[in-house]
Every structure is written in structure tokens, then in C-alpha cells.
Image (cartoon, rainbow, N blue to C red):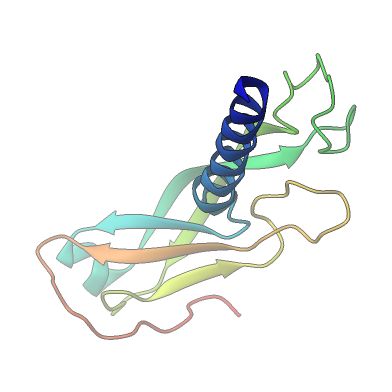
Length: 137
């Protein structure tokens, strides 16, 4: 009777681990990257150039993201890299306008496309809820 109880308890714990991983770990592995670029109201009126550094995930070349006993990525399946973007922000930009860089975001699996990067403009002191427009074509 005791072995049966321990086996049920072990299955229950494994099921809880699986649910926890599905809810929390998978949600952090979002392919899309959302960043914010802060500018002053003067920069918004006149336009400016800003440098922004983005950290993104790149799938491990050794284990191909499978995380199976990989010493290269320490079983994570990916590495974190940094990339610098130069944003040419036009004059008269509005709060929540954004830049979009397709397929330059996170990649956790070689079988799936890389995610996108969205960099939203925030003007200090503005709390506008308007939906922004895309700044780069």
C-alpha cells in the first residue's frame, strides 16, 4: 500500500512540474521582443538618432535547442546575444510610434522562424494611450 501511495504522489508531483513549466517557462520563451526607446519632447519635435542595445536568444548550434545533456549551452538550448540598433527617429514623432524589425528577435528552435523586434517610442512625461504607427517600412 505504501509503494502505491508514493507512486501516486510522484506522478502528481511530475504532473505539477509539467504544468508549472508549461505556464511559466514557455511564456518567457516569447519569440517577439518588445523594447522601449525613451526620448524628450524636444527630440520628438525635432527628430533624433538613438542607439539601443537589444538582448536576444539564439538557438544553441551544438544541441539545436533540444537541451539534451549539452555542455555548450548548459542544457538551456539557447545563448543570449546582444545587437545594437541605430534608430533614426523622424521629427514630429508621437508617443507609442514604433520600429519593427522582422525576424531579428528570439529563436529557441531551429525548426521555427526567428521572432520580431518592436521598439516603441516613449516621450518623457507623455501618457498618451493612442496606438502608434510604424516608423520604418
